Length: 521
Image 1 (cartoon, rainbow, N blue to C red):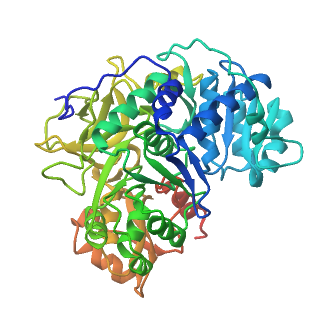
Image 2 (image 1 turned 135 degrees about the vertical axis):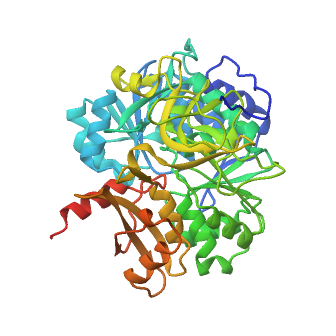
């Protein structure tokens, strides 16, 4: 059974992304497009549009051409949106890089995509310079100042218009973010202008965010979630985005209060903090009408607790880098919502559930792998046709690697990752299910569950928890055992100081597995 959006399809114009956004910015004048927190430095829509054109002209004068790959290795700043769209306007390709990457990880991405230029920020310049020669970089630009680098601001002194570039929106790339997909090492995800134009329009229709909104921009712009759902969606609808260079709970709460943020796209760990941390009570967050969570599963009781505490909607969405990223959203105006669900497919998107063993299409309330397709689907993985073929089947369905089901109303629920399912004597155990039970314990602040090899059973579940109140491992394991089937109970539990997570909020279970494997017997 194929599931579709409740809304009619949206019209997706066959245009490049940046001219599309620039045309809409023209009438917004001095309205703030980006505000930097905590300082309050502001970039207006007029200022953003002028800076994009000047920076594009400056980059062209420095030798950036259509098809060149330009790395952006920076935290969230208003200038990030200038650099990204200046590169795009020239028909060059952005590759966005996690600013927390080590020199080794930075080198690997730059080499893999063949980047010729990098835009970075002062704190990260030394890392770029360490790899510049061996990666064949022609020039490094820096936000601010730095020895051996060209100040990005100097590009804005360029005179004249950027060169006119002919683009095919359905073929020409705008960005190469990196994703592991369902397996393996990070791969360059080839996203076209058409992919991003489509997803911005699809998300705008489903999310209901508009010109009157002020959006929190704490999720990193290098990540597809922050790039599309915050930076580019905000520019499209005319919202104001308040940027934060990194997440700090106290600064985040200050930002929400001071700038009267109305719409906060976040990840589950932030929702958990909003639901439970005592510091939240010190702030007036009455301007918030929606907290939107994505990038990892959010437990229903956490969503409900945050909603009750903040007095606003807490909704979930779903997507993946290979889909630009959004495929499912819980609608803000839905008559009935399920806090634990990821919502229905967005317009122009088809979704289905297939059996894990046979690939057979399943109906409502039957769990299997979630498959999706639509105009936001990637062109493929860079230089990896085999990996592309493994991800997208012959009928154009992208296999997400996530296990889930759809209820009778077409609302989807994610159970877990295919590769992370724990197989206990042939029975499947979803780590996310056990994590939700652990998080409902009064003493548990955060939790993760991983498989451990077991000679008799194949695999058994082990829990890791961060405590916020005194409790023993035995007490917590007994609590879980009372709430799950016997085969699902935890066989061991370890109390640790922090659950390792990616920048987008996903639990890095492999780190915990490796940690456990490396532990002395």
